[in-house]
Amino acid sequence: MIMTVKSRTAPGKTRMKRIIIYIVIIFLFWLTTIAYLSADNIIKAKGDEIELIKKDVTDLKAENERLRLRIAELTTPQYIEKTAAEELGMVAADSDDKVYYLP
Image (cartoon, rainbow, N blue to C red; front, side, top):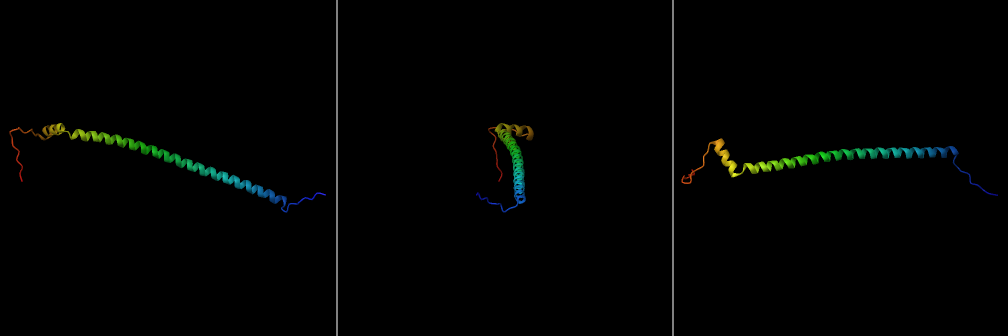
């Protein structure tokens, strides 16, 4: 004679436990998907922001270089002499002229 063990839970309860497990699994899958999509969206937005900042940095570096060249041009003795003569009406001193400084 073979003995069998009877389940103490009713067949309806086992089925309900399975349904609850499936619902929990589906909910966790849905929650994971939403979290992944949110993180992906944030990463893409930050990537776009980084690209804009890189472009700004490149533009500012080019502007700085242009300004350095302009400063170098404006501080040459030839430019200063030309500007003094044309805009301020100054003339170069003769070698025999003396310059006096007032105290």
